[in-house]
Image (cartoon, rainbow, N blue to C red; front, side, top):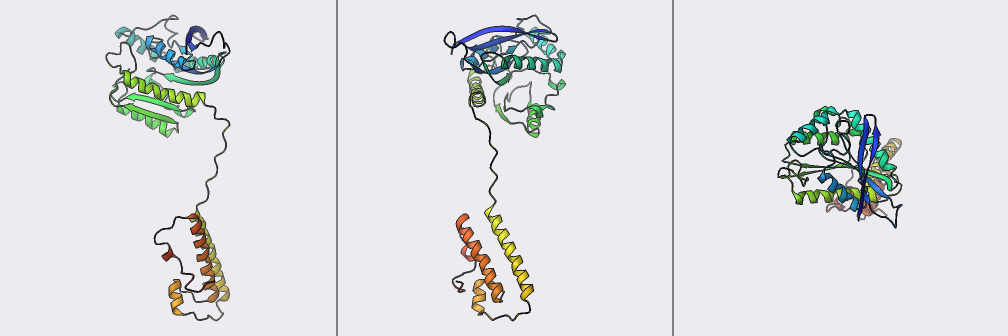
Length: 325
């Protein structure tokens, strides 16, 4: 799709924050077309060429990567792009720690509200963030239980900015916090491997394209598919084996109660061969027939519901041989 680009300035408690908008161009035929929104939070250099190119790619898929805010509006004039050099890196790293967490939260809230009220936005939104944060000075991991949506996290195993111990800490916090997330670590990727400009030789187009496909899949599944109202999950069916055990226990209780009631009655003799074949030591006719009833019920239910093990017939009385009707 063709795209349109513009910007607006949102008023924050510390002054104006410029937000760059990229959206599908449906003019002039469809001025009221609506699309999902994607909030793109930049790296420490603000809205650079690579960030703009990413936003254009997202917009061409039928989404509004709108906002893309200038994260350090407290320190720079609107429209400032921090250069990819030593001075620019030091400046961006200094800004990210000097800016308060409350200011980051305020920016995000204003941005999402503006995106939701955008005339071309459906109100459904996702977020995409690059390398931007306060590291150990942040309480983001402690607050991860507040995350309600699905996450996709992508790392390079050769990224010295986020070594193994740091990635393990993030993974554990998200897992312990019950966050719904996917996790991908690329074996050879370094820091800034998706940045196609001044990445110090770390840009890998093939890996970057693969990661972009994962992002597209998540955005399509969460932003474009209408699932409708959820229904409650059906209750799990009771285990058939558990039912059999309950029947047997109940019948055993009935047998014991009957034995206590009839203990004084004379016991008829049964042929020893029948007792042996049936696998029981009970010789009382009532008790014997009741026990066979348990076996018959269990056998019928097992034939219907359970896969037959190879030794199944040997585990039940041979009802025909004992003459049970």
